[in-house]
Image (tube, rainbow, N blue to C red; front, side, top):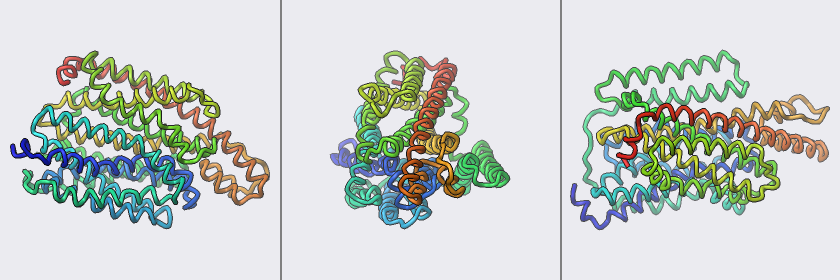
Length: 506
């Protein structure tokens, strides 16, 4: 394989796979500012809106490990090209989806394409760059593209919605795929080392179905729409499928996920941090985007601009975290980043968004920087506790942690908001029961319901909705701050023995 060392195409290969990766990351956050527009254009319910945003990271979390192992069997090039094709087609279909259920279906297809692309990109970078220094540079560039892609998602989404219809946030992927597909086809080596053996499709299905059933039960349970018996039976099914998956992994000679890694406290700490930090980032961005548009009447683009501090700071957090961990050790850096996140969330809970001044952008930047340092610290903890043979399995666990965190963050923030919002909403008297029930679901539903009333009642309903949403936002951020503070204590305990590991590793 040493041909790659003198291979002049290797930096072109890096550009091609980073371009392939960019739309996958963009799609994580591009919809955050599109929620109000989407809700009204498709008449989507709160639960449907959550699924439209959520099904993508959740399904991807279930698919990353199976697709990574499939790429080892079939070859990264084939899986990457197939993933790019699916992603391009699904983007075009999503752009023209006529209703919410079809948009959810195309988002599922996008997740399948994304889950095929992500593990292959890393595998190709590792294989193409034999030299460790060059590989470090390549992985650093890849990480920056990932952070920057997630950061500009809301801005690009906002800019597109300012000029075009909501489908444009998906259609933008199609020209990118049209360039990347032929580039990867020509540049990527057809000769690959592959692992022989069958691909355990049954284990993959158990993992995916178990995760989706469990999350569906959490959503349906809190939304209070479905009968409790149904929610409990779905929850029990999801947990049973996941338990079966774990049993199979522990017994199998060639497991899909190496669960023995969980015996190490540093890996548990890293995964918990990955889930909570990425979940908080996704949840805060989503609620903030809705607060800015629904309550402060900003356009999607203005909302994207308002959120730039959190994104820009998150993009520089990665390199800073590596340097800090090498200098001071992983434990203080990880714990302090979580404690600062908690402080920033608590500050945002009491801040006045109507008059942000310098305080709100500074708190947003502090939150973005601290959470992104926490995410990188989680990566250092996981990779530092795994040896080279386990790097692939550890990487798959970490990526799953990020996706699962984003999905669960959006689920829990969204569900929590819906419940608290309903309790805080004080509607004008004399409205029909069906209208008050619909309005109590979410701020999007308030706007849709208000359109059915006369001007005065509609305005009164929207004003009541805005007041309830602001109160909900504060309660939510306070709860997230408490969770972060508790997590910093847990990580402090779990990372007791890792100082030497992390510094040695870096």
